[in-house]
Image (cartoon, rainbow, N blue to C red; front, side, top):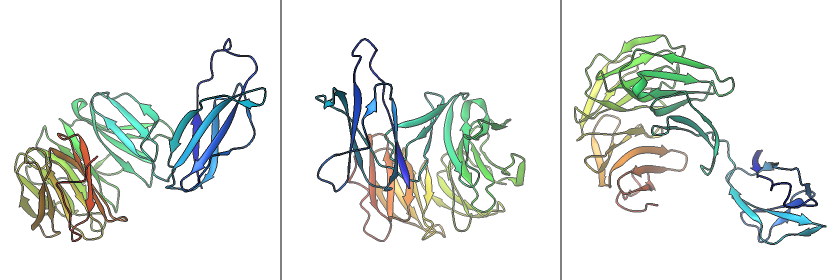
Length: 320
């Protein structure tokens, strides 16, 4: 079962001497709020709400209590617990952020970077790989211990992808027009790099089922495919591709082109299929379990969600 952690800042001591807190909760589907536990004393600033249902919206109200009577307007908050542990690399702030499962709050933040551009999570080890673009390195960060493993000597690493079988790391280095390969330990992988020269390899994705590597070669106007051993499996023309994501159920990939304003579905054998216009699409992800595709429209300032291929996708509408 999941939990929600509630934190608040108590008022200064001179505000009142004799007060406490009373906490209420309402779960999605319930008509009214119900009090949680007993009243909290004035020194409380934290409450852990255990045994909750993942994926359900939980609303909270925190009241002051004076002489057993609740105050007027409460402080309010909402949360949707779940098993996910998202991580976000913030290029402008030079920070790595751990985010709550519902994306509403920051759990922790970590510095020590110059320009972190991409994060890839090694779920089996609980670590995070970060491409620190303008520091010419890739960092493996362990949030449990704070330890860091540095892979230096790169030019401008901008894209990462983890091999699903051995958890080795592929790194797209736009400064050297190359894609390098490293073992999970940080040692050079086998192969140590893709044999082809790739102009601006800014987007990478591994097929979760086969391990096939997809590469957005922005400068080469193509989305290319490689085997786990580094052998070329073909390419699909696409003007200035930006990012790519693979549907593990079908083996198909979705690629975006920020400059071209397109989202394109590509079969596992490289044939371009459906496409649609979007305003500055960059990030793309496939929610295989729910059968949804998500695209970030950077220029329009919204995201678009749609059914996966074969269910009548409409790439031009439905944003937020």
